[in-house]
Length: 105
Image 1 (tube, one colour):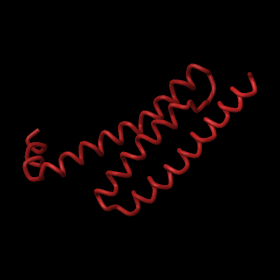
Image 2 (tube, rainbow, N blue to C red; image 1 turned 135 degrees about the vertical axis):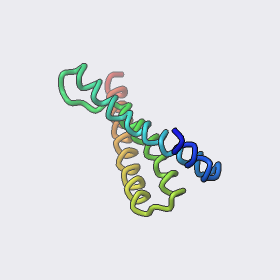
Image 3 (cartoon, rainbow, N blue to C red; image 1 turned 180 degrees about the vertical axis):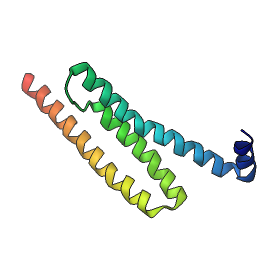
Image 4 (cartoon, rainbow, N blue to C red; image 1 turned 120 degrees about the vertical axis):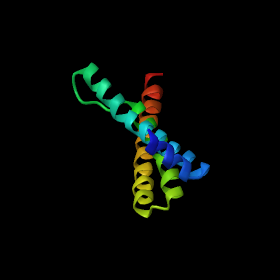
């Protein structure tokens, strides 16, 4: 516990806040796997629920912000690229829902 207190005392408030954002972002990003796991267990087969993509976007945006703050080009490139894929998958989900809704009318 003393090491944590020493670390906090040796860093400014902005660094501590961004560290908290980084951990929150990672937890949000990890939730997508938990959501996917629970949904797959319920169905008895591997599925990817829509919530997976929303957690991917939310966690990805927060991790990208953290990566930009840390000025980590590898982390920035990885998160930015992933966000394009997550957004594209949400586009497909919305398009399919719209076409299923229009076809049912």
